[in-house]
Length: 116
Image (cartoon, rainbow, N blue to C red; front, top):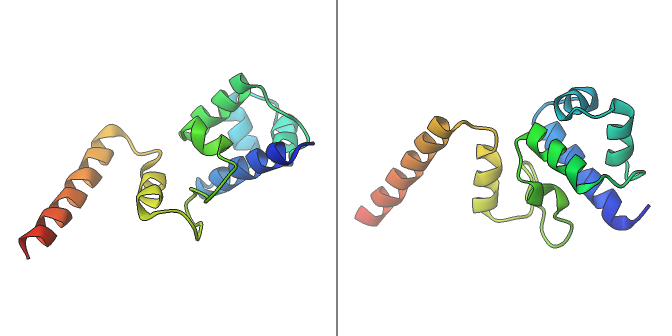
């Protein structure tokens, strides 16, 4: 298996674990076979773009995050990546109303800082 396949599998595993899901739960949500899900995470199988799309949707994560294989990681709990990436990662999975609340809070913090 290619190094890229292993990295994408690792990305999927990191996001899945950050969401507190088992492989079986993710497979069920993505409507794919649980055994196949394990093979994808281990880099043993190359999923099609359609399957990657199903996995991203099931994880409520942008597809780009799953296929990002170069540079810094963009995952919750990762030690690298910018703070804006970390904030985006934390907001993944929130509904629109919750995202708006986070945005308003951050905006107020920035405005408060500018008043000093």
